[in-house]
Length: 103
Image (cartoon, rainbow, N blue to C red; front, top):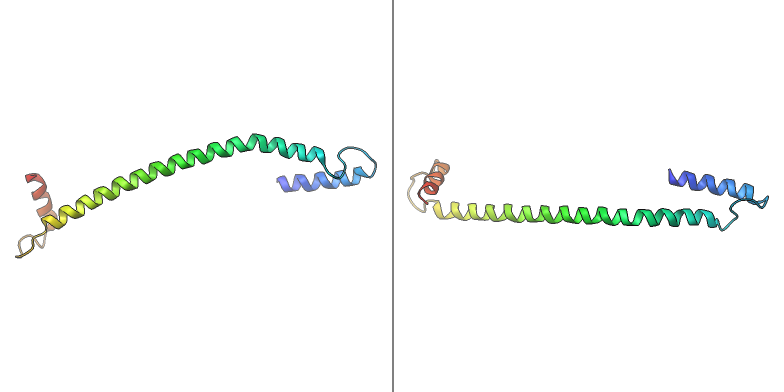
């Protein structure tokens, strides 16, 4: 949308610029409009980036906690898995809950 406005602005000013009215070739008024837009947009963009960084940090922290829990569960399963014999090999979840209730 902005590109269309700029092309129309330039076309009107080139046609009207021959008569010596409005915003001539260097388009100083158009540059002023862009500068004003940038002055308003920059802080909003920075705020959005900061919010995104905060969300990324929170996601990273949740991932770390999940990984720590997964590692703890894996270690628990490794310790609890019977090394010999066939007892409870068919139902390891029953053995895990049994061991957790004892802990």
